[in-house]
Length: 294
Image (cartoon, rainbow, N blue to C red; front, side, top):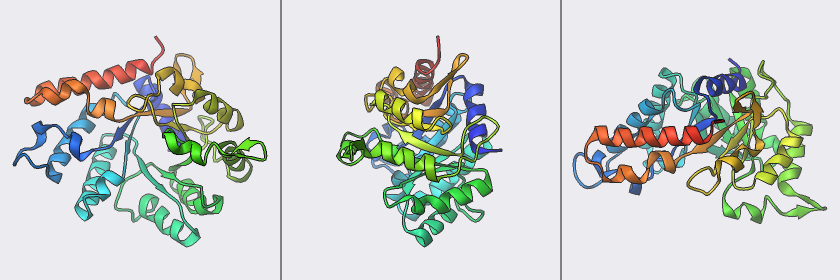
């Protein structure tokens, strides 16, 4: 299935564009999962993530593992990433690998094969890519994604405070993020699915809704991946800015929430697994409800 069609279908199935970021911060994993000692082990994170993914099924449209949190554990951490991505695949949960790759042609080709190719050690439906070395650096990702029915999300306007240092700079009277948006429109293929959306998406933060609207006007057929909702301060209303209301569901993208769902305040105090599960279900349902039309 075309990547954009898969995301659109999952959004309609679950009733919201909620994407759950899998960011297993070492210092935030509940003590409940530290089984062998007070010190955290990778097996504790494995148990935590398998629980989270099981609870997410039917409640989220996609999962987005942040690759860095697995890389910091070395080869064993990457093995865990492979394991959870295949587990999510078995549960029919789309996976967006948040790796932000991008480099010169041959290096990007290797990255593309590593994450999206036939011999990849990881299952991924899509990958985040970085265009700041030029659009040629993301060509290999686009080619393999089209061939394999997968997707890429290009960084355009991110939610972090420091994004203004470069992305909001004005060049000849126009912000860099708008120039990047226009370059994407003018130079990259659309690769539309039956849903009317491209398999090439863009990353646009939830913290600046007016900017999201400007980008949507330039790129009407591209899925938005919207970070910054929840813990980073982006409201649901702001997060909706670049999405498209279709009847009673916002489509045309995914809105990511990580810490607010993975580590809700109430979950820290529980020492019984069923109490912790209930707190995560409540956090998932809360995030989902905020992203639904009442």
